[in-house]
Length: 93
Image (cartoon, rainbow, N blue to C red; front, side, top):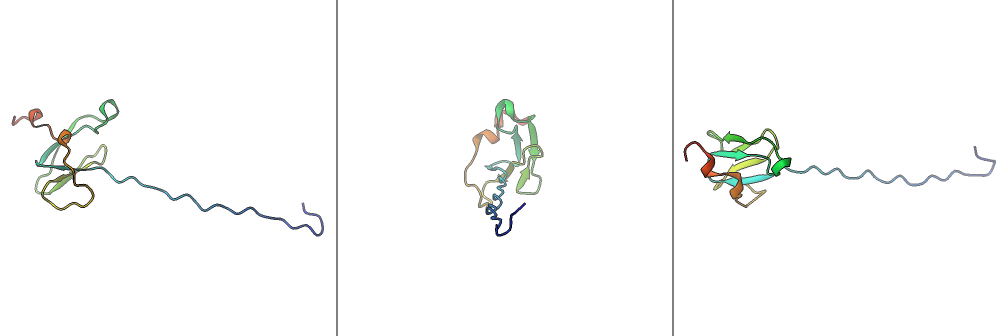
C-alpha cells in the first residue's frame, strides 16, 4: 500500500527470449536406399532403411534427418556423409 505522495515504480519487463528451433540435419547421399540410426551411437535410434522411391529425398521418422540425393539442388547442406550409407550392409551387396 502506498502512502499519500508516494508513487510506485515498476521495473521494466524484459522482452521474451527468442525461441530457436533446430532444423533437421540434411545429408546428401548417392543412392535411393539409405540407412539411418540417428548417428548418436547408443543415444541414437533403431537402425532403419529408407527408400526414396521416385522422390529425391526421404526423411527419417525417428530423428527427422533428411537424406537428399546428391546432384539435386539443396541449399542447406553441401556435404556428403559416408556414414549415412553403408554399401556393405545391404542385401544387394
